[in-house]
Image (tube, rainbow, N blue to C red):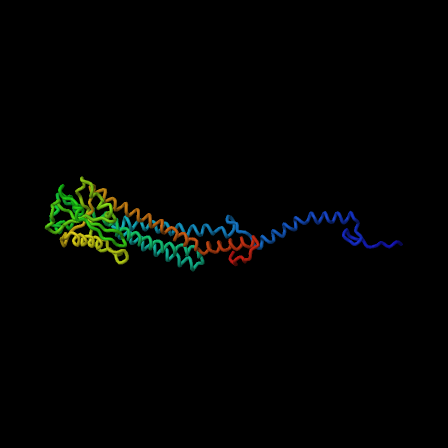
Length: 351
């Protein structure tokens, strides 16, 4: 009986040329599949983040929440304190206190429950409420207080330059007689880090000033090489003065007192020209249209609020990018990008 030998495979030592050729063709066919599997394995270990479907997609949303909510709070409370604190101070103060307590309480509660993004966003929003309220109150003290004060004080007509200023202590607007004008012969100025403060006496145009000056026209950064050109002093039709109120502001320790600088300018007039000033003199801004000059206080307050918004925007942007999920997602994205490019680095554990 004929013994049958072992059946050799296609890749055995006695394989024929045809079988070897077919095996090489099979290897060539499998090579793209093997390479694809290797790429998938590598991608599964170090996948690039999909911002639409993966956890890394929370980067933009977390940063946006931590940016927009504090920015809105800062702008809103800045507006409230700037324009509404005077007529409804109690309501504005209540809204500010309630918002701060709500943000801080919600932040603590969210942190206890493990919602770190929400806790961070509410904490930053509480800071924004306090910062916006402080900026708005500063804006009110500097500008919009004068707008409301004009509406609450009296107007005087046919005021002479020699009239007793103390008798007009409750004035908001003084309408002078036609012959009373700022006497630019005795104009003076005082320079400080806050600007140049200018002052000129209101006289009847007499050649020699023998009596103490009762009323002074003042302005800021409006005198120098071009002469004295504050407000409407060069307008021959202007005969009204809006009172600049002598009051103590809570921010004077940091910003300096504007009234103090005006008084220094008046002292310079005495030192240069010997012009004496009454003890209870009144400072005014010279204008032809008091109602328009009054509205300029609102305009100046809005400009300061807008500048504060633009200056604070980078701050809220940086704080928004500091949100826990935003920071973690950004780090994960950077690490995975490095690994995909073959650069050293290990993806974080939270990725």
